[in-house]
Image (tube, one colour):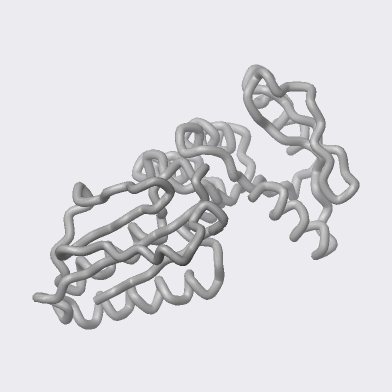
Length: 211
């Protein structure tokens, strides 16, 4: 995703600062994207590097696509330095993440989904949940979420959809979440459907909602 963001920013004419952060063992390495060599820094010097970059580029915005285990520490770093950020990584301790942002007063975009059509759908679901609470009471719900095999966290999109349907009266406990291979099965009812004609290892993301 990080490379995709760089490519999108480059195609939009935005300047991409050639700095990134990763594990200590990757410090000093370079990654080439869009003809630009991105220098990777490890955790030991990331605060000083980020502060230096922010001084040089005061309009800097960090776009974070890492792993769930690091998002809270990363957010604390961005808040400490004072740099606005977009958190593209899902998972982690979301309540703590929100508190970090509120305490730091930095601008941040945090969403379980960055696709504009899905964001619009989730907004519509929130409106429906507020205006018609309990409308789906008595119905069962199945949400099938599929991702590439390397995805490390449960889908934030699926969680957001479940939250809306809970407000609409559908009974669902997140403890019912089951993971089968690379398939994330969120179940209410007896059956979670799987399309055996789809190679889910090649999927970048798909959500199916059955009510």
